[in-house]
Image 1: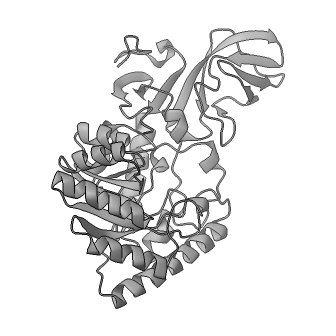
Image 2: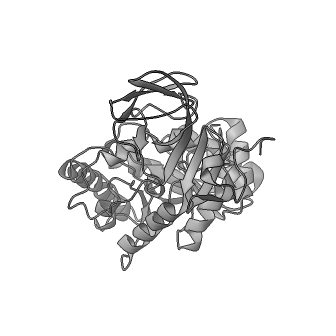
Image 3: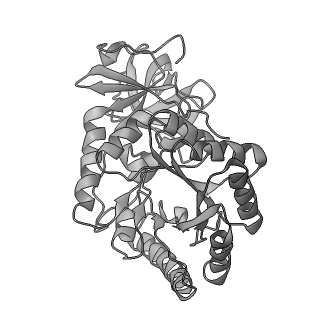
Amino acid sequence: MPAYLPATVGMPLSEVDTPALILELDAFERNLDRMDASLKGKSIRLRPHAKSHKCPEIALRQIRRGAAGVCCQKVSEAEAMVDGGVPDVLIANEVVGAPKLKRLIALAKRARVAVCADDAGNVTALDEAARAAGVRLDVLVEVNVGANRCGVEPGEPSLRLAQAIARSRNLRFAGLQAYQGAAQHLRKVEERRAAIEAACAHVQETLELLEDARIPCERVTGAGTGTYMIEALSGVYHELQAGSYIFMDVDYAKNDWTESGIPRFEHSLYVWTTVMSRTAPERAVVDAGLKASSVDSGMPRVAELEGAEYVKASDEHGVLKLNGNVRLAVGEKLKLIPGHCDPTVNLYDQYVCVRNGRVEAIWPITARGAVW
């Protein structure tokens, strides 16, 4: 924790210093409830992605509601989760290089940890590191199901890698990682459905080859907030890795959710900011710029104020374009909805958790900056 905090428990929201990352607890909890209700009666597990929140407190709340564990993208994120009491972590990514492998294996001695691979040489390195430490490590084959990022090609290439894992004395083939990240922000439901149906076909092809080779596949894991119900109903997936549903952001709000089967999650995460300059009637400047809110998926949106548009960000400043009816004074505070929640969270040390206009808790973002 830094020496200075923007808020203390019991403080009115109006007194919270800015910029601050605000979590509206009622909306956050309703999002958790909506996810639980949407999966009720379905034989599929939720393994939410912790890269969205980077906070063990949130992870443990999800696990207490029945989540199988969490996903992480980096060893350092997984270390923060395990240090915070999370017992089961899938690193849904490749881990490469001796220093990271050493930390990965050390972590596997403290919790249930699995990792993904898409390269035979990396499998060999994982096996050697596990052997040196005297552990047996769960490894999933990451299959490229259309995102064209990481992942070995489906079918025979994926089978060959699974066979290499199964032959390794210190590794255990633990299933398939099949995340179609490119589908999450396709705006139309039918576009997202088509992308996931293609992903499922790739997975099914691979599963049939594994079955023919008598290699059991205990889980297929993947899915995100934009598509998870399609994967849940596919009969192919066992775990869902949705993460952003707890917060939502401007980019996800642009998706069409009609007839998707996915509930309308609400915004719960905001950047709290102060008007610091009002030198022109059509312009206000706030103290939340690039170092306070990610703009990779577009600008933040001003919440709860019609006629104000966030149009420009520099390091420490955000420029609002105002219509003639907006009256804002220097010192007034506003909520901004982040364009992209994940990298915005990574800019802060803590969530200021608010209920009914008062600070109820401060939750450390202990995996903030955990990128190695």
